[in-house]
Length: 365
Image (cartoon, rainbow, N blue to C red; front, side, top):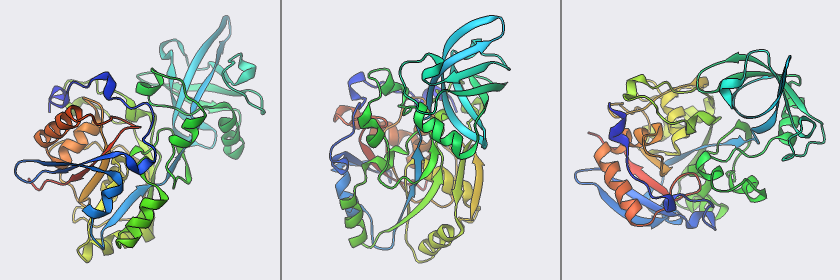
């Protein structure tokens, strides 16, 4: 499909720079695609009223790490140059793939020192500088970094040197601060490895969990370590020409069995966030059975995709021309979602990672 079909105009003032407080006070646009789209305005705290006993919410329990690193590139015969690297996928105990800026000037064999000893004054690291060698160079500024440290020692150094990788549409308007360390993390985050938050989950509170429990709605957890590729624009003119970056995910055997039991008794699978949905659909067989699953996924969902397991989706409002707007258009219909987004903009909904939410029912067309 043509990528420009997924374009729309978004006013700058619609981009949220801070989350709602309390989290579940964010607005919730409910979108029913049957026939003419039916849109209704609510609050996230009202979510239990749109579900029924026996339904199951699926959450992504990945935990965001401070994956934004600042440092100095060193090369024999050349002076040092300040670089920024956003880690996005770990491939070995001492190896990360990253997006580097300025990427064009980085070469294989370059050494990069991150942290205060590198000369970058914006971070404090009790462990000293963190050094890596550029082993590979890909497209769009992607590099493969092999660090001098490995395993838990590398994890500790990244925690000390790095800072929270705020989405570019927020970072361009304000710097990261101490509030973001809490705000840009779900209350149930536990598996470290993401470099972007599963933002639909940012709306949940302990009070909302209690209300869901009282309504007989199950909670299940999967893990997809969200990568920085989620923010990359689609530069191709046609969706068939776009290549998705892979992300590492895990669906446990017990979780798969319980979700299959939900489906057998007539309950609905409600994914909280596009990351949970992409992982469940990656793990699902053609007959809708969810299998235990682990490994990288680069699933790219566009209109025409046949959903195998997911019945409903709770998700924030996404960027124009993005793979995520393509996904929600596949789930509820392109024209339905264009109408929903037009309504959201007109009604003053807040967009993107710290913005409001929507609850989408799957179209059967």
